[in-house]
Image: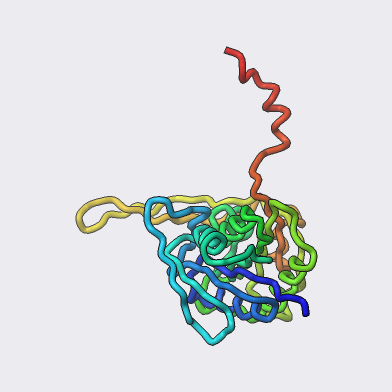
Length: 259
């Protein structure tokens, strides 16, 4: 009998968030599941790790599923480190992160705690996928995404991923029948145009709220933003080697060693 794959599940919205509970349910149909997730929301943490405070970890019993669960006081990246080096006795066959409440397409991948957990797993040599649904509501309907998540997960388990590559999967907020399929994409060239709403508290001290809008200037029809707007699930292979390889030759032509 073939041994079930060991699947590590994490997120950035917290261990009780509906998104991760849905992801756990799907993963339980595929393999042996261990959950290590933050004990409170950690959205927008990026790849932060805890270096100036102690980390706490405790076993949880949140529902009646067969999974083993732990909550931590740390960031999503901390969760992966704790799982790999303290909690698990072997390297997982796969790490899945999410399902995030909200988009992590395009430039959002940089800020995402969901994707940073997946990237940290990739750094540890674990094939990894980050899943996000384009609905920021806490009570978002994740059920239409379940069969697609299972399909993508099984494909990664069956085919593997190259070293240094993880998948960023974003799912449109549509009924199952309205989702047209899955498209492999590149990350759109888009960014946030930001500003700060400056206010004063009753004591006369300034404080700020970060505001802004997302602007996509990429007209390509091979991007994650295009696919999502057309009703497709976007799958972007993300590499965490951030070297601009195309610029190395030109940079070597500079007079860097001349006094």
